[in-house]
Image (tube, rainbow over all chains, first blue to last red; front, side):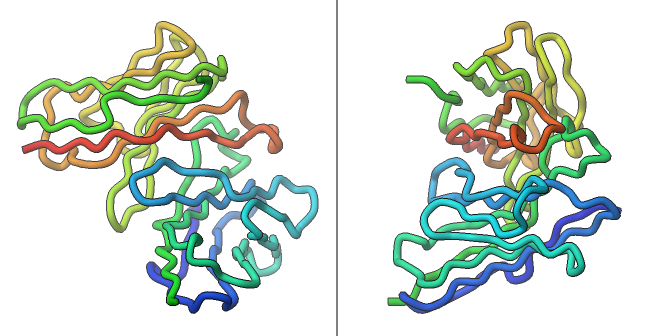
Length: 116
Length: 116
């Protein structure tokens, strides 16, 4: 079955430290991959997306993600965490076999905590 | 302002009542989606629409009804609200699907619904 998994419901890092949020998908065909961020009491904002072009994708706010087909992963990273990065992060997938019209499939989310 | 709006932002209702959540977008996007967000589940697709008068069920459509008489509006109705429908509801839109680069979904701010 096609699915997307985010490892770790909560991740805590110190300000200035590396941020690594993990996302793996299960699909025989590489999907389109997205990372969204949700700040408290707000909607979702697109951070970045992979759509079969470059495997290293740069997004907003200094985030980037690398698509690794062999590992079926799309982990999100940021070299140096800032207090303003504290939020909920969602990995989401569109599986091409579904045509995309059936919407995004979301991971359960990772709550990023930044320690001062 | 252009964008995607939802109303109301907060709603409290009672079991058995009918409730309609509104979604309006000004981009003339063809595709619109409704998701619900619950702790531990991420976001799950309720219904989507490919164009006016074309709608289809998502993963968790039981108890919900949608309509789309105009491209810009996509109301979601809970015909007889239940406590299990207490959730945060997000509307999203995208111009087209299945083409990768244009698959980004844009989300509204959400409606927090409580069913007592």
